[in-house]
Length: 279
Image (cartoon, rainbow, N blue to C red; front, side):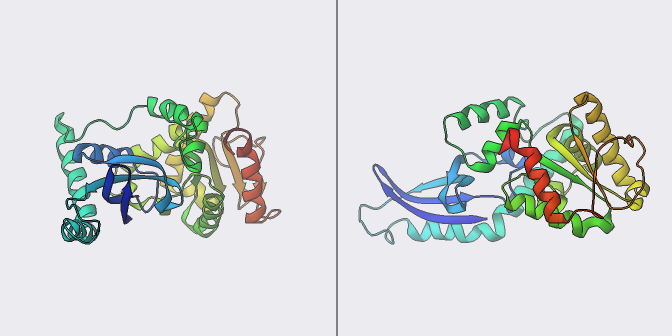
């Protein structure tokens, strides 16, 4: 998403183009691509996007007149108009070039942000200069507060829960929210990282289809590996769609069931569970 705004204050006078992915937050690869292109800065509380974070570029006004439609205006507007057809395709080509040479030990882009980014962001949060969702991510130390794992027949339920959580300000890993992040990825490696390292809790929709499908099996293995590392801390939160047992999940693990609770009630319980650290 792109927004063009006029800035006039102090010594600054010109246009700012604000950039924000359709499904925030931007992936580490996108962050690296913007760094490679240069000239982008991050705005932690952008008023153009509901005071969430964005990236921006500034184009100074080149005319002495006070009329913002003189001088450099036509050029800046032509640049902005070209974004819809050129900017996103250009990023895709840049990322494709990086992936093409990476197996040969070469990099077009610098490495993605290091794990210290979360600590740096947490420090910035303490100074009160980031938006709500960025603050929550920093406080939890994870990229996502909740990762959803489900089989295809349960997508309508997962979709409803994901949207209720997102509307409440929770960062959720739900594939429909991040199509550009998943495009061209080695999904086996990417999902392992999400379910084993990058999420605070993992919500699993337990069903017969979940037990039978290859991708959900892969996600469950990663989640179970993380649960072992947590040494008893609550990580896997099962929602029972059908009364079955999943291999690896002990029958003594507490769960909620759709036979007893609505999706609204489950979303409310999950928000309460997240509250001590993130809300």
